[in-house]
Length: 333
Ligand code: XMP
Image 1 (tube, rainbow, N blue to C red):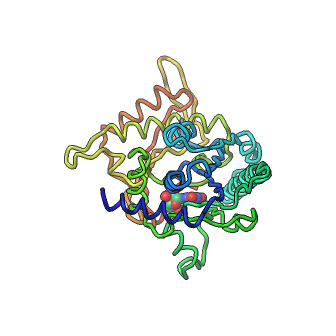
Image 2 (spheres, rainbow, N blue to C red; image 1 turned 180 degrees about the vertical axis):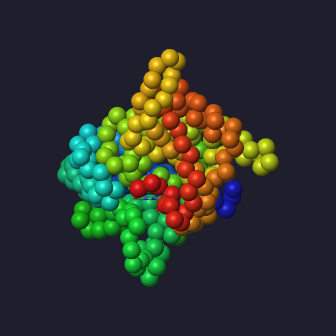
Image 3 (cartoon, rainbow, N blue to C red; image 1 turned 45 degrees about the horizontal axis):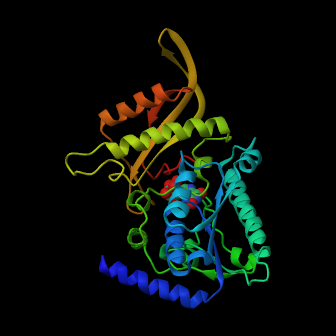
């Protein structure tokens, strides 16, 4: 709409003024905020923006390719994809405690990004090179990190944030989304030409499938989980609720599959199977602080379970998580 159109023009003008003729580096996660920030900054300064996309190997099915297709293919922005999956899986081997896994993933992420940033800075060659680090910080992040509310007595889960990175890299900070709420970021993304399906995606945790594979993370588990989860999401998107005319992906706030590293017995044809279990999780919430498990139609659950067990060899049992938050959290780790 024209209101967002005006906003785009103003935001572009502000970025041009702040950046001048310098260059900007941005860490792309595949999430909504960093993608919208990339699109906006690219609109303002074109090829003086370089995005670095650290692929930790714990993304969903085809997610890395979709990020590249959107940012490089569609927007024609400069993106460097760093395939660090072997590094991440290597460091995660033998580690099963959730907070320990989070620390490893968050720490490696910063290390890989920093190494890439240093390379780019060094490659400046006669030219001034990169002087800004852009981040997709949005208004709720600003309040959370500055306000008294952040002084929680107990840390349930440590979300890794990249505070301090600009200083460590000797770069100035550029945060073009810091006045916006999530719904405004989404509208801005649409106005900048990002696909609706991407802009309205459910939230995805920074450590990715690393916290959706219970206990030790293994490539075999991640591959099985990716395929099962893709079936679940596809069926949610394809099943429309007649009462609202919306599909079940839109009717839930977050939905995903969890890999349980336990085996149970099943029967297939005239053989016995002894394979892994997955849990489907779907919740409805407005603030993610409390959440209800979603009352998905039985017919939908039945289709998902049938397809996962038939299509993903290695999984022979599907369960549905009927726990609300609190006392359960949304993610299982
Ligand atoms: P929980 O599981 O605590 O999750 O009920 C609340 C919301 O936060 C997301 N979440 C994370 N996001 N890094 C993130 O960036 C994390 O380590 C992390 N853990 C949970 C979760 O997906 C949900 O949207």
